[in-house]
Image (tube, rainbow, N blue to C red):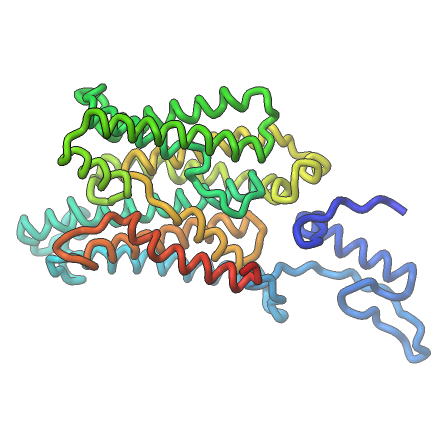
Length: 409
């Protein structure tokens, strides 16, 4: 008998996940030769009880949580869910623009947008117009872009490293961005040319370069990626703390700490444009590698047996996730738990196939961070809480709930 491919997590056959057509054909062939199907619908039989003609089995995509869709068209269900998710994101962005210490209405938002489109409407007062267009709308759009980036990065790294606790900050990029920002703010290195965002971006790039140098002879093994990323992150975190303790005063330390916890307050249209360019490119690159991510989730041997260039694919995905994380952290600081809890929650709802999982993770991460940032603005108004604090407070119970629903707690 031909050897079966190695099984994945929980005894799952990777061929059954990656090649549903082959799985169905194999079961049909077995039913035709033996007269008794191994699984799936029974083979029709005649009056004599003998097995009749074998019928080709049509594979169906699992429904939410892996459940059978019950005869409905899986593509239609996914399209409907995608449209609902997109509408939820658009509605969340519009609602979040209205939320804040200063009250604004739906009409104010519509008039601000109509004015920018050149429509003939009565303009808002300069104060309200600036509040909506220059402060709130860039902030909410930045939250959506960063949330989508972090959720997709977490999804990709959990597959690449086969580690359920992997998140976008696993590679040490966040720590490098923090070191770069602190060097600009406290030491004044490149303050006139780079600014805080530029310094954070340079620090993130240098930390990722250091990671690649340390991994150059390891074959990019998943365990070594995790361990080396932790080492690089801890080194740069210690360096950041050393700079703060040695050179910063109390006010500077407070400002840097607020930035390190993550905040959408610095978001402006120029940084939104940068994220709006980088984020779709990164998400597209990750989605094009969705089949390779399915294979990598079952391990190196399984991925190689399916014809995936493991080293090159891992390198590409590490570069993509590092770029997305670097831009996100450089603009708004380090925001935890989004890239950890969102992939697990979405995976529970739509299943493990990455061509489906990645778009929904991006939408869910965007919605989650938009509402989290809105809560950070109003929870202790007029004082604003760093959004990273809110994501941690919400993320811990949500993560425990996901683990409990999956039977792992």
